Length: 376
Image (cartoon, rainbow, N blue to C red; front, side):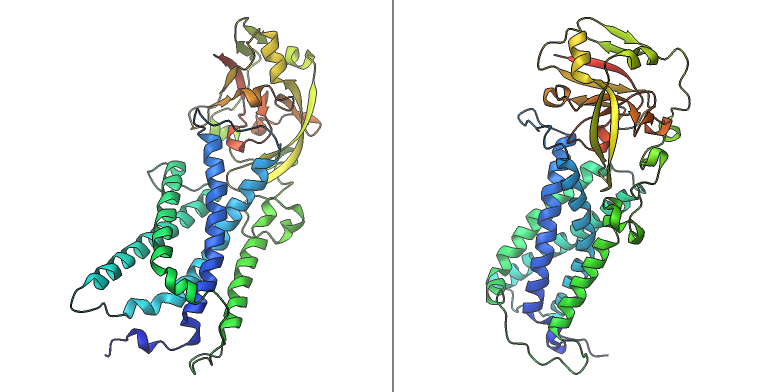
């Protein structure tokens, strides 16, 4: 059996121009996905030198949705990109060994790292959207580390291929397709773009209500769930099965506070129209009512600019506690919410009380709250 060579693949669809065009699309998707993912990571692990503002209130919603969307769209783009360049696998390295041969080896190693990391990143990102974790390593930290590996490998790849990219950046005359296929380059571009658009349309419905009926790739849809709002982590999953009659909400501050649920309802109530925007990409606006966190801080005599630790009744889990930086704790939209969409919180939505704040990931909108701790 004759082993094919790079010259065996003469189809116009393997032309460098095709790889450059699809590579541009993939590069844009990866760049948007990386930058929005970086913002999400910094929201959850904020370094001391960085201040994340609480406004615009829906900023996290309009960044995390595109993060997941571009990650999904990158899948058909990556497959198309690999298909256009796979004949390079059959290229013979220069012989005898030389600097050029060493450069070829390094180039192929960088491509191996790039493709392997990108494929793994897209896979674990997708299964995260359906909350399936068949691995022993922590998802968020691994996802973050892989993102930097991808960026580094991509920069190396672009640097090595820059002359070829520059030569094929502009439109070139369409060569005749090989006899083995009736598809032209333009048809291929339209097919790949259509596949990406189809993936986007069938997944964006988890945030865009109008696309809900065709959102076959969306694990959650707006309006479906208790009180018309989807739920990621149920009370049963969190180990919160019942709230006893002796339940009390406390604030550990200069002047400790303690309230029953009826006493909380007797405090001045405020309303915030804010979305729940989750790291899995879905989001939905809702109407929340409850007590402003900043009012509770003033009642307990907390100094201005205090940080607040929020403690849940959740049993275990990575987000049984969260912190509200001063910018969020003092924002008038940040509530200890007691009601959702006009009725008392359902247990799955955090009854008897939960946090709702602007521009925050859903995992930090802590449910089943029973204590606030004022931090210096």
